[in-house]
Length: 576
Image (cartoon, rainbow, N blue to C red; front, side):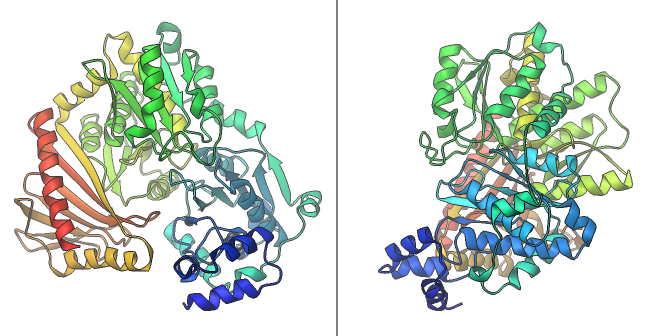
């Protein structure tokens, strides 16, 4: 795509939004910025789209949002009048332009005669997932860029099951979006007129109440709040989690909750943090200050759209440590299964889901309770897809789903990761172990002692722009064209290539099918159970490297991970 052609089209368009025209004029002397904004269309992929806000075909703006919504409208209409009448639910977070993009989405769908339900204020992503099924809608949209920097926003699409669109449906929407050549020419009707006709309806409190009731229902020990006094510090990191997390905790009787005042209210600039990402320790700086002042037992952080949860707990020295997603997942899973077993509520066909880059510790825990564990590709949509398939077939009963990137789901009234559910269960687990004289940190050590000293790490390399995309593909091509037999001093036992769908056993030379959808991911498994996985990020200009080891002790696993990760990344830096 010639960026100059796209730029000229926008510059000459007489009806261009005033704000967009002003921003475009600011860029006119900077060819690099113009090229980045126009060298391609903002990609609408299997998870929707995400990008920097601003003018251009490669940016998030009202025109690219209209184009995405028009493509979705085409997909809904081809499913007939019932799908059109069932319509779509739309939610949005606290980011710049989220409300505007939500309304542009609604107006576009409604212009095509599709009923739309729009939340009256910002709401978390998992509540959108819940609302799709509550309202029996045919689709859902959430305007969010999760924990990306403030200049980003995004657009995610959900199906009638409340999960992000599966691959087949997403491909069909992508086809519809790609068929629209000029985003500037997509017209929308007047908002007031569409509301008067009932094609845009505002929603809120009724769904909030039902969602919180469902969240409270996940409690395994509802009386624990009365029997303990868990001291909680919570930060929504300027996002959507503030009200639903607090309401959920209050419903169950957990009243000793201190909210970080500096991060309580929505702020699209996330001004108190460098990144609103609960995976990063820096995001917990304020919570830790509050925690020390209140002598809190548990610190909780949710990301801007409240689908990811981070926890910090006291170690044996009384210092707050941030748990990894794998560690939080292990604690939640162990608590959940132990309670269900104690009450005789573990189904014979129970199943736990995790992604291919999530710790094997989860599998060990699940199988110790007689529960099977299934791997899916990275991305919670694949867990949601499996949930619906097994719900229809009855073959397995969903018990828990999680991924290393701080996403957890306990009950299937939502079909996407849910930080509100996870926060409730984490606090209840804290109360349960506190009652028996154990801290959450001691509980984690107990889990390691019983199942093995698993440790995981993540590293990434960022490559921006046109050349960046080429660099990422070059790295993956290098590993495919020249398969490694040894990495970081360890012999490769097997290579899993999720693009070709084959697992190669290096010792026997035999290939077996992986039976998962094609994805541009490589995983190396070593003789000592160490593994390394390589995949490009689906939402950021990065290539990610995941590492997993098993050690003979906590310290040994830390040392082993550090050695493997540092030696591998040293080679990667040389390669680039």
